[in-house]
Amino acid sequence: MQSDKKYFFERPIVIENMNTQTRVVIATVLSLLVFIGYDYFFMPKPPHGVDQNRTVQTAVTEQASPSPATVTTDTQKPAQKAQHIDQQLTQVVAVVETTNATLEFDALGRISQVYLKDKQYRTEEGEELKLFNSPRIPKPLEIRFSDPKLNELAFKTPYQVSVSKLTISNNQPGEILFTQNLNGLIVEKKVTIYPDHHYDVTVKLSEPKSYFISPGVRPDLRIDAYTVHGVMVEEADGTLTIIEDGDAKGTEAFRKARIAVAFDRYYATAFYNFDQGLDVVINKDVEENPILFVKAEGAEQTLHGYIGPKEYKILQAIHPELTKIIEFGWFTFIAAPMFKVLMWIHSFIPNWGWAIVALTLLIRILLYPLTYKGMVSMHKLKELAPKIKEIQQKYKGDPQKMNAHMMELYKKHKANPLGGCLPMLLQIPVFFAIYRVLLNAIELKGAPWILWIHDLSVMDPYYVLPILMGASMWLHQVVTPNNFTDPMQEKIFKWLPVVFTFFFVTFPAGLVLYWLTNNIFSIAQQLFINRLLEKQKKGS
Image 1: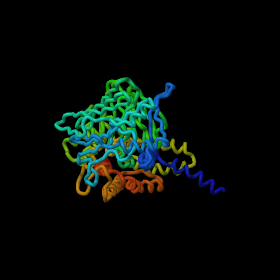
Image 2: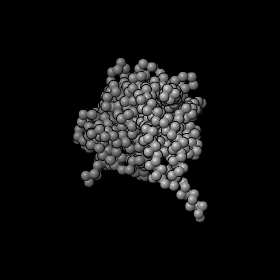
Image 3: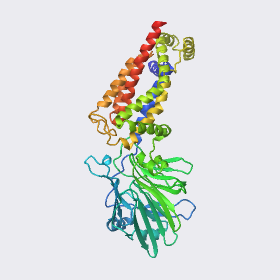
Image 4: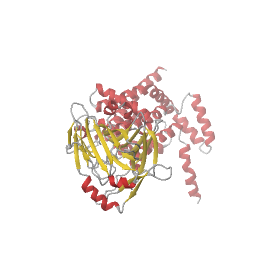
């Protein structure tokens, strides 16, 4: 028993013997690993396969209580009726061709499919990219009436369409009109489509009724690890609310929202109104995925919509506020301006890989003053390492005295135990920001760099960049002075390049390129400062 007690009581001494700088470094590394691990293990999983013979019938109903309208789900009786609707009313009745996309409309006046024509978005087989690959509902522009009987009739009655084929060219919009007769209630849905993926929809009713209209569920392309999928609402005060797939718990309502968007890594479908706002209702499907609706009342309602890639220049040209669809996570306040700088660099260097290298160099230059101070501090701590170890050995049974003598030693030699950590701490938000930028930027999709790197948005197929990144991290450790006083700590840090190489293997090549370049510039800075300090030491 005595030996057991000794073992457990001795474990904290390892932590107590760590100097402040070592603790901060460990905290930094753990933060990076937790950040990466959270994204990998807790991202929403791909939805379960949907049985083609089972369609979930979802209806919007208006409650007698003052609570918001909700979407109720019935998976039993409506099944046969839903199959009949699928056969009769999901057929394509109109096709709209623009310079950038092909839109298909079904007999219920919904956008049933969108094909992107740009070569950048094509599949690996070279085919046009389909944004919707499952029978999930609602589809974009789907209308749900609050009156259950009227809603049921609406899903049995096909729309009459003004034209079955429409080609839009010369940057001019085109219009298509859908008309539905619901026992005397005339529903007109006029869709004005623009070549840049956005559209306007005006719904007119022959008499006022309460209804809901949806921008549709998010594009359901392959689920990517490390990325967020779900819906986002920008409220009237600018607050962004994100509900990820699998996390929807019930009905949520937002009045006068500016944007309501369903999105995946690269693509989005959205409604927006920056003047009058939108009354948004979010519900969930049977898999707790969030579903967007916009509540409408009266005889006429006009909405602005977008279906397409989350490409900054396209969204900026439509409306500057629409770029908020591109969401970079916790560090958006850093990532958004950093992305603008990256695009500015790309305007001069028309290769995204070299633009990333240039951005990394710019960041290193901006951080150099702090880096220099940190490295000077680390050199001082390295020289004090023998004395630090002596104090730790002498007072290992009395942590308070040990810390007091350590602080006295630092003060005497004008050494700052945190001085070497400040540059590292400042790089944490920078890394997280660049991580999100390079992960979510569709501009990198299909963008080559050199030689074997043909797409910066996917992992290096030959693992060359991750291995070089790990090697550069090890070399940086070699040239960087350290003040480890515990052999176990030193062994742990020697294994960090291996750990990071393992984590970075599946990362997009653009992100690994940034980290590799950052390491190379850090090594160059370290060697320069080492020589500078050596000259100063000899001169003194």
